[in-house]
Image (tube, rainbow, N blue to C red; front, side, top):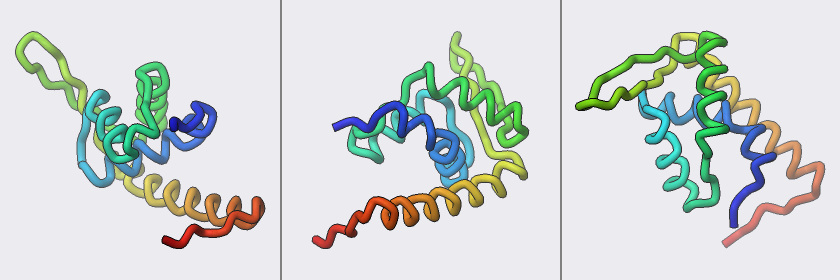
Length: 113
């Protein structure tokens, strides 16, 4: 089962900021593969969704970039800026509160296993 692109689009900035807060620096493909692995293939980020979001976060001053040459290839690494570190925590806390509110609103009972 995959999650809809609509749900992913609303959480993509939070996902990226959180991953970068834990991994210090990552390149695009690495982000997609990490998300895919961590979610058991439930979330598969496309380049068409990922890179515009990375560029937007960079334009907002939340990410810094570093380019490395690997053979003939150029790899662009993304890291959190100082503001990005603060925003990452804010976004994760906001999302946690959102989940709690949605569980209440939709009357979703927590699964116990």
